[in-house]
Length: 152
Image (cartoon, rainbow, N blue to C red; front, side, top):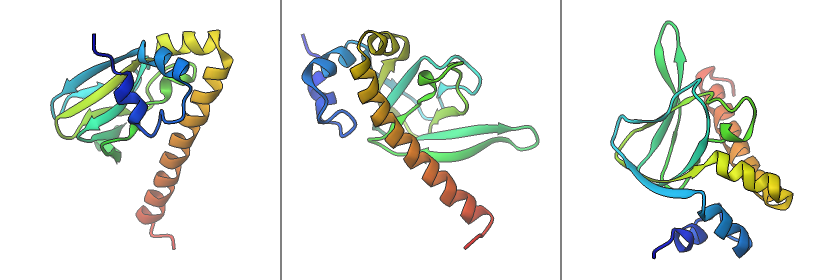
């Protein structure tokens, strides 16, 4: 039986993670494909998963009443998408849509939260890794705002 574990072990997000934790995380993972234009998740819906983009790219969108969907950021291959599954009330704050056909690892957030509750060390390790992702997104948003308002 093939497992995703060797593929996940090679990804920078999971590198250095203890093998027992990698095995636990793999138990919450699956491999999916989506077509360009398909939504991975929609703003306001239940956030119960996160994704690793294996191939392709995903845009994060925010709906604006007068303008419709506004692209906030485009996330490239190799990156993580989705951290709303970590924080109550577990709702997506953006929509995620495939820009191109994408191949993804998808992780069940309910499964992972349960494993983190059972083992706080695993939870802390994942939180450190997701914090790094969130800081990168925040910095990218900051640069985008500076560009938008031409503040130099």
